[in-house]
Image (tube, rainbow, N blue to C red; front, side, top):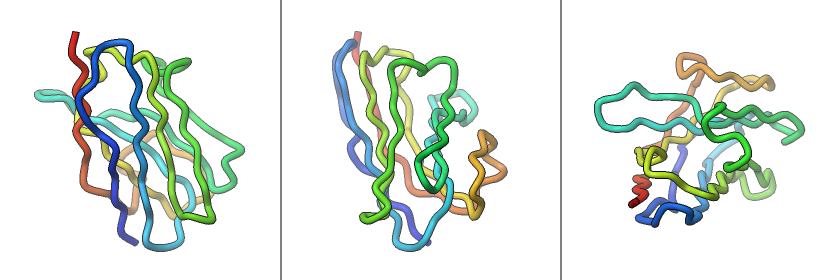
Length: 120
């Protein structure tokens, strides 16, 4: 399974971006993680196969929304009210399990990251 993330860019604080992650094969639960310079990779959001179960990091709750279109094998991350502290490389990841996980070590596949930069 290959994952291709896209949609990153430069945006002013308060703005919005939508990230996409296209999967080449069948996936189950999918997550977004991010890594800022000098920091460890951290969980952002996750969604199960049906889309009926989602998890969010406290730092993005109420601002970010994860969704998926299984017909297109694509997961999205809608990011609103972006803050400078959201600046990071964002990675999508997939897991061969129906259950959502917040742990990077549980992921089976990773895509290359897409840079998100939020200016103040």
